[in-house]
Length: 362
Ligand code: ADP
Ligand code: MG
Image 1 (cartoon, rainbow, N blue to C red):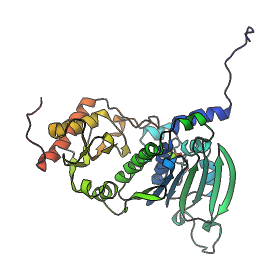
Image 2 (cartoon, rainbow, N blue to C red):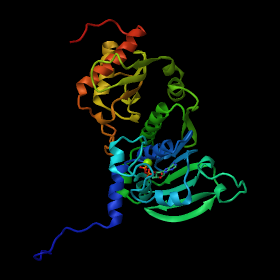
Image 3 (cartoon, rainbow, N blue to C red):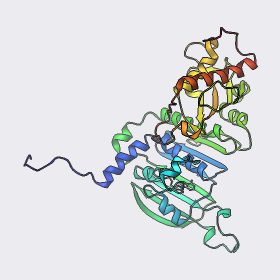
Image 4 (cartoon, rainbow, N blue to C red):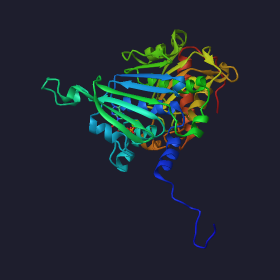
């Protein structure tokens, strides 16, 4: 009713606020996979195994052999805005080395799913010595459902961390309805895991879907080895190295390194352009246009090469504090970035005799 002084504006309860916020961080199973894989990499894992069922809608499991968490760590980790990675905004401004820093992923994922975390601290991160099978040999299992800690119990488990996310969005039906087919959701998951596998050839990364292995890198190799494991022999054998720093035209990029494919190895999707800025998987129009410019007319219309390209820029030329869902970055000077990427990729293609000569552009 409209009594004077009355208002229709009300305070949302905490649960509603949490679920709305969750929808902004975790959009689909692939977003949970991204957050969990980043946590594993931040924990210095040497292996990260991702298994999903039904495109990740029924189960996402990420297992690592990283630093692990004690019981106290685990209890803290699922609370909102808890992180071991930064202490203040100043840390963020001086540049963060870790992939995560917001301290919201575990809390958020757990508020829209049934999440089980089993973790045991790595031996080298504990006091060693007793060897008598004490507390240190036991891990902790924490069950977290719809934002509530359901149970915390000791459990036998290997060193490292396993996070299982079941029934994502079970308590947010509108969000659940928005999910696409299993095939589409799995394609998003595959793309995310592929990007981290390619950027971390020294970590053994595996992906399986409904019990079938999709790929597994060895963790012992270089970028070429990771490309072979992920994309197969035909693609891997057509890749040529890009490695340019001092010769770049003027612009914000300090170096462009990685591999790009022979023009004849191409696809009708941009999905195989894996591009990174300061180690983070991102997309940027300027980078994509630079790559495409280098190939010029060598590619038919709507065809894209394979590329795994790493771009280094000074910390202050790009903002990492973008929304977690956004992978799109922009540079102050997009034109210069486009010219730099074009030049780097072109020089690699020319060096391998893979470009017909073309008129110099102005
Ligand atoms: P953030 O990554 O931004 O710090 P998260 O909610 O993703 O926030 O994780 C909270 C904290 O839990 C991390 O800072 C880290 O200390 C701990 N943590 C999460 N996942 C792992 C893992 N796989 N191994 C070890 N510690 C982890
Ligand atoms: Mg995180």
